[in-house]
Image: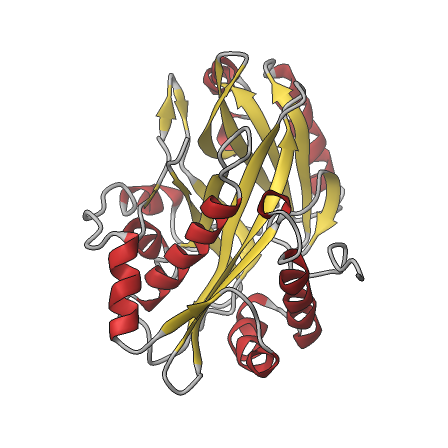
Length: 328
């Protein structure tokens, strides 16, 4: 059996450690639990230097912090760079949070003010359907969901993901092979998932995927972070709840496959504010995490993170609202 796990796809989570990623970002997924905020201040100074030298236009640090350390962020020089924090259970009986710190170059400014984005993502209506009700509704409308990519679907998926998320046809073929190969693995060893909604005429009308990053916690355990991403619905099918049903199907796969892990998966989504994808997240039970812990303010907004070809003007980099599925 050929191992395709290391073949390149468009990754949303990235790898452990420091790497240069798309859209001129220097990105670090830090292993271990941070209990001393002096570490955050040191990383902040390094990010400032990298921005000043033109090494990157955006520096991002993903790290797990104890809740005490998160509270202490408020008194550091790096407090303004804390963009998101998601509750992630506990380690050694101490609450911990998965955090994202971001520092941008001067020219990389949000399209809408952070204050406005926070204000407009504070409250949401209650979801109108449970996941099983969405699946039933989808079937009644003549649609079906699939977790694999068939050969005849590759071009259709490329049509949806190519210009929007910069996927190549070859990348989709690689993803297809990985999904097929994973069927032979124990479910708990899978690290990528896919969902597509198909109509009666075999037209792919909505797609999404999820990717697993295992963040070591330093005690022999990992925090399984699953990013739900690449949400895209075909023109003419928006606003019907199809995407919500497809992403619900995606999350159901993740929760089913990883239910045997020592820690439940932390399912997150960085939702495009420009298209208000957070409303889809809300419809399927996702929530914006708390925006204040102690004296630490957390906007839960990732500023000018990546480019999305969403058809909105102005084009280019987008801001994202952090959401999570509260399963912990």
